[in-house]
Image 1 (cartoon, rainbow, N blue to C red):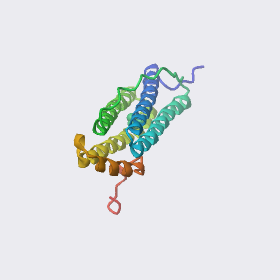
Image 2 (cartoon, rainbow, N blue to C red):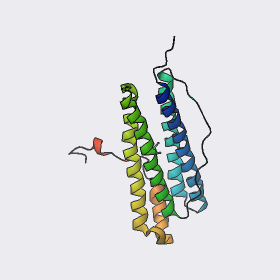
Image 3 (cartoon, rainbow, N blue to C red):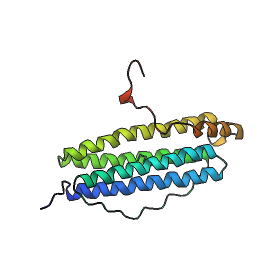
Image 4 (cartoon, protein in one colour):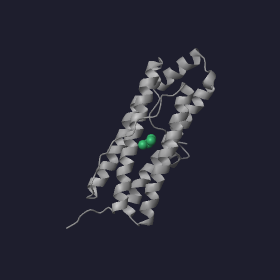
Amino acid sequence: MDTNRLSKNIQMALNEQVTKEAHASQIYLSYAAWADKQGCGGIANFLFRHANEERNHMMKIIEYILKRGGEVQITAIPAPPQNPKSINNCFEKIFEHEVENTKAVYKVAKMAHVEEDWATWNFMQWFVKEQIEEETLAMELIDKIKIAGGENADAASLYSLDRDLENMPDDVASAEDATVENP
Ligand code: OFO
């Protein structure tokens, strides 16, 4: 008796998303190592922590596939892109990657909608919401580096940005959680 509650296509799309989250984790790892080498230990710390968050996303999907009686396929992870050229470029690349990942998440959610797989559709809503946070976080990084001078940021501004990011939280409050009392 087949107890797999996922269609072939949805299972494949979820497995692809597993690889995408693993890839995201590798990207954050590689940028973190690069940032550390530039002397930006605070930024590196922030990015290392975020690499773990991406891995948690991966695990969340693996657990869901298994819970639905599906089959998990762990495949090769593509290599991360080339190192950034500057801290400014690093944050831009992070933002671009997050937007790419949002598109991938929407694709799976849309597929679930078309197939009327409401369990997967509902599951994917967590990721839709998470991507709002991830994009907001990336936008905040871009704003911060802009204030520090963008490509022309001097050593003093980079130093203070690095110290700020050391302790910056890994997630941001999203609009859905805002209230009048706690905007
Ligand atoms: Fe998994 O959220 Fe970023 O990519």
